[in-house]
Length: 176
Image (cartoon, rainbow, N blue to C red):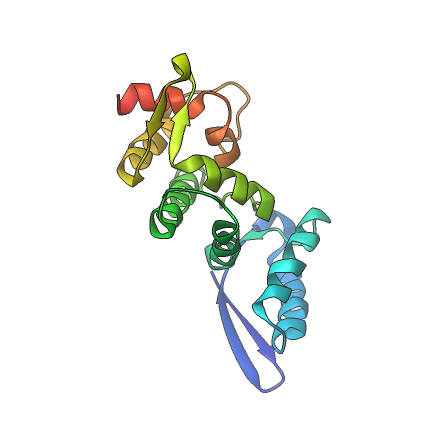
């Protein structure tokens, strides 16, 4: 969905998916306040400000463009063997598949959560202390299998996918 926000003499268009349940109008008003305050500041202001609002429950939308800003910052602070391009592609594929499956955007992630995921993306370890290197193509196959798997009481978030033995099981089912 395209949200147009007029700020003084500037028209700004944003491609945001707003969560209808909480109200498009409120989200646009809130984003206008954030963006008006941050137009003259650095990108770091926007990165620092939005997660605080998310924890207070004030923003109910997912924007992959905003997520990419967080991802870039998290990637720079992470220790991983995976390239930034593959990392971004994995997140994008997961979020796109989630949205196609559930007809709604994935929930927002905090910067620390993104860092944690990035640090574990390039490998998978569990059974018999074996470690398996994972790549973009393996992830696409595993993600597809993940969304076809029935779980008990599961929200299918990327946090669930990265937890416990979920990736290990999907790896053995699809890539081993």
